[in-house]
Amino acid sequence: MALIKSISGIRGTIGGHPTENLTPLDVVRFTAAYGSMLLHQNKTPKVVVGRDGRISGDMVNQLVQQTLAGLGINVVDLGLSTTPTVEMAVKWEGADGGIIITASHNPKEWNALKLLNSEGEFISAEAGAQVLDIASRDDFRFAAVDKLGSITPNHTYIDKHIEAVVNYPLVNCEGIRNKGFRVVVDAINSTGALAIPKLLYALGVEDVVVLNGEVNGRFAHNPEPLPENLSELSAEVKKRGASLGIAVDPDVDRLCFVCEDGSMFGEEYTLVAVADYVLSHRKGNTVSNMSSTKALKEITLKHGGEYFPSAVGEVNVVKRMKEVNAVIGGEGNGGIIVPDLHYGRDALIGIGLFLSALSQHKNGIKSFRARYPDYFISKNKIELEKGINVVDIFEKIKKKYKKQPLNTEDGLKIEFDSDWVHLRTSNTEPIIRIYAESNFETTANNIALRLMQDIKEFM
Image (cartoon, rainbow, N blue to C red):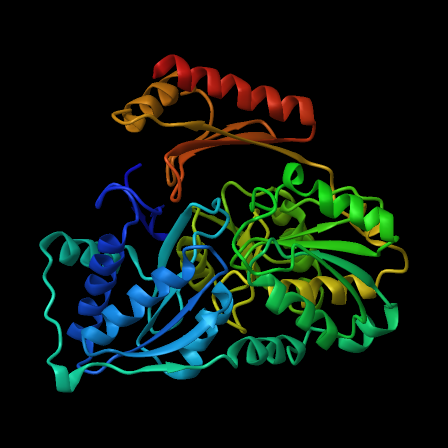
């Protein structure tokens, strides 16, 4: 499989041939390109590096850090960490950038380099293009022996991150403690096992059960926190009579909940519920990507704010949030961005705010979910073979549906009265994603199926 180079970083499967997979040579090449870009900006840059619990994580981590040191760059080694923790550590360290070694929700054979700027945010498309250009030319100049960079371990930042969440003004630890929640966590054999239980104890939750808590990267199930992958968590919540279940992805930037009866709260509604709570305390605007539920727009208008859509991808959501001065934002995949903490998807602050909101609700999480509408999003994908011209396919679909409202900012979004379907190529996999939303599950599925048939026909 070819390497995937996008706003989400450099991603590929481990092993195989260079330039076709994420091999050690590719790790060194793209790390050197990123480091060389930083050296153009600062003669003595500092870079924060952290990783999730993947099997290949230690190998890739050593390659990344030693390559940076070979360029003369000083490294702060966070070791096993979370994506939002690394993002925050970049700012706390006053570093010039950061590298997170994680393939997020992808299966165990994948890994990736997520590249950050000095704000602890994903690098821009322009900076990404510069990195790719440097890598294509192998335009690196490594340091002489007496100017090699240093590598300094610092494993304190998960604790600092938790402290920041606990002290966040809208996080109500007393209310959470008084509710006496019993929580089951699916840590999916990655760094959520290090961060989430410790966070829950700090928030005042004393009864915590952890599933898949060994950090070994041998994911007990598909690591994407979708309903079909959370049957173990659902069963354990019911078995233990727990108040709720919590699931995160391997790098802990996505978040979803399971209700006390084992049903799904709905990953789309993680952001909706948190936004509702935040907007009840702070008036303002919201942002989510255009593949996310329309429920966020409705909640925002109810609180007197304005809702703005963005293209898919954290960097795009963050850009739009800054443009409109949003007080809360994120993505419908369970990614929460709280800008006055940091501009990054963060399951830890998401848990703090969600439990704070739930602590004010008289009954359980199931009735809490009933406060929000039951819209249905049908999420589908079609794998792409090499040589497929997606642009041509989308043009043909545009012509077929030219009488409907169309949005081409990010792939193709088509509106059908109060329903919609969004087609786009993934930033992380060689696939076309097809998301459709309706008030009715059957309608959403039928819309998605119709467009999937169109795509296959035009292929």
